[in-house]
Length: 503
Image 1 (spheres, rainbow, N blue to C red):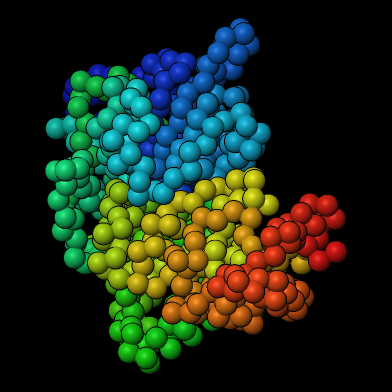
Image 2 (image 1 turned 180 degrees about the vertical axis):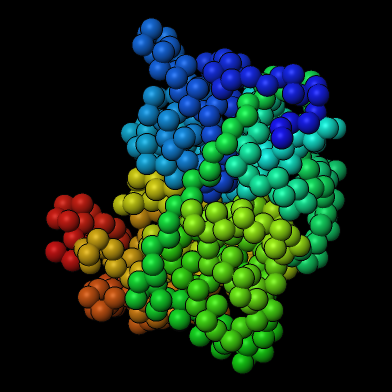
């Protein structure tokens, strides 16, 4: 049966190519999608075809591309490969898009995920021309059933002059009822408190709304999300997870956490997935989550009864787990709630609920400044995503990474971070496979010593200690946060020159 049961919108069913013809050179185009789920599958490729043909004729064709977060090769990849994106925001993870950004061909606005919707409403990004949004179904009254993500779709539908809908029958029709779309946000000075007092509380609607007069095309698809496999947890990931879970036990014994913990947030990646697996093997039960994405490990926690419920904005599953979820979706109803990302990442809600946040990093320096986005200070990897939303407002925040990279040529603990996304004031706990450094309540020098002793790899620990000791001696009037300015970034420079931070 057709997923499009609104008679008015069913008359606008067309091809991807015809829909793409509605988009002009220079348009600001916002698309649904968050961590490889719920993004449009065919219209971006048709836009890329238009751009390729225009370029072959010697004509300009490029758009500004806004999304919720990362998408997939069928969106970011195809558009970047033909030079069809002049500006990108707020987050990406595609190799082709990354190359275009780092080559200077695409401007990149890397911003906190909780900020992107409100900044669009404020007009900071300019007028939005077109929204391309994937949904699971269109109801007879024109309401839209979202699929595997919500992200910024609500905002894009509200703000865009023209709307293109992709209706993807790969998403189970049973997604209806899984979503909570909040329509109460306001611009200052009319803002009201967000009345969200527990992770699964509903404060909005189950559906997305759209002005049917703005819809210029509806395209039918049947295509899966970008469901990537997770690497099996290696020994380092297991060690990081073990250190973290042991620390949670310590906090319970100290009376600072209840035995069922507080709502969990887990960033995207294999280490975060390993932490969830470790929790599955632990004594913890009655857990809840208030997070951005639901990965395999969190779904496993639901399946084994450890996790009562999870509020997020998107799924990010392997192909096997996605197929299992789609087949058994009814079993998760009432235990999974998908919100707009401005609510899943809302600082007020995160702080009120007391979230325990776990996010990855590229490197940290000896004082606790964290780089989560750049290689060697200049080349963007993905972006800050939601890590800042959660880290600054969490009850507890953990930044996790292996202590070494590139076969030991790079230390993840360095004298000074080559790029800073999270300052020392936002960082509570660092974890590597070597150990855990609890930085709460410590002065800079005390933080430095704890990070070196607990988190640095033995191959670099002595070098870090030598740097700190000499920095203290060299700064008799600056021993609060002593640095050797001529050496602070020398490890990164040495790596670029020799291929190793040690040589």
